[in-house]
Length: 523
Image 1 (cartoon, rainbow, N blue to C red):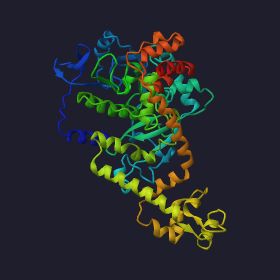
Image 2 (tube, helix red, strand yellow; image 1 turned 90 degrees about the vertical axis):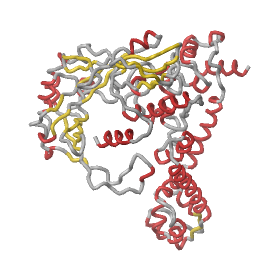
Image 3 (cartoon, one colour; image 1 turned 135 degrees about the vertical axis):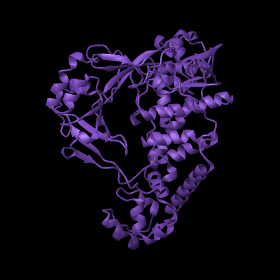
Image 4 (cartoon, helix red, strand yellow; image 1 turned 60 degrees about the vertical axis):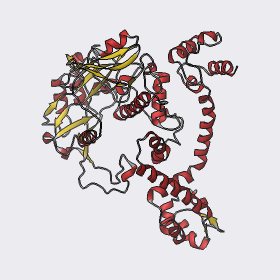
């Protein structure tokens, strides 16, 4: 609730943004170009670019047991008309589903029967601009409790009225956050499942029961919850439900998130088949940036797989598509050593500043940090330590004693040695590093210790980028290449890869297909 309130405030304090609350029911499209929207009240709003961020609202259907009704969220109407219009223009659409747990009254819980989960001791914010902040005075704990075989038995009594098991839900659900009925069905050998009891805010008693996502009948949900330790007298604000909605397979998009079929129309979030807040937020950011650039007749802004997880996510969606709700995992990235949270500012602030997003203050801070990192690395390479000043500390740290002078850089490479211990224990190091901040020293330690791995990954990026530089004309006719496999020809024709690198990552394309394409493009 604090997060939502803060963003509302930020939006309302942004110049040149107008707000109007109404449902969009259609797009104004002329000669293949999107020129605005039509609202439910019949208003036509002209626009040079339109970004659709429909979430779960497109023909959304909510399921609770054998009840079903239209809606994009509980108590909010579904959006109709947009899917039908886009399909009539040649777009392909499909259905996905997601679910949500019951919301309950925290005053009706007995927390003495649960395990408390306190907030973090070390606070890490969303931004590098406030790293020196202090811990907030007020934090709210979460709590852990568990289901049991008795809970599962009650839940099973509702399976005959479950929309999931009765086939009333056609869409595929998220693989990595299944409903509670799906969990007890798929993992029948498990006697219990963990539930996280999460407060919705500081100024409400409402609780989110994470791990109990369900579309079972309301009476079954309540009976089962009352068998959970601490929930014996639980009161429900609203039941959990499943929601089924339309999405558009993202292979129909360009890397800017502009649609291939209609110019100046961009898709972001669950309309592209993703699930999760961060996945939606990053697409909204990229679609907004590129809608602006398109209107200004500037080149699109595209992040590479080696630059950001945003780049991995969008590249995956456009090359491979998805037939289930897509979630971003670090394991999806081949350059994980480069894509670290500690260096996000060093990787991306300059790109953001060039777009006019990052402020001068933020860019200046990033340059200062980068400068500090390089200076400290140089200091460590030049600073020699004597055995008599370092050995007592080294042996106490479980590391071998020195037999001769050694550079601080070499000592830092040892397992179990960290830069802060070195600074706190060795006066010569402390004096050399006294003016540098904690975040600079942390970055130095990571770069020094992982230097050889980072270098190897950079070499791999360089090799891959050679394929990225080989452009394929947008109008290229793949039917000319009779040596291509049928699957590769069909996918190249449909996806229209812009580079050989993109072509190589399309699902179902073999290395031999890329080689054939490479030879032809070389000619």
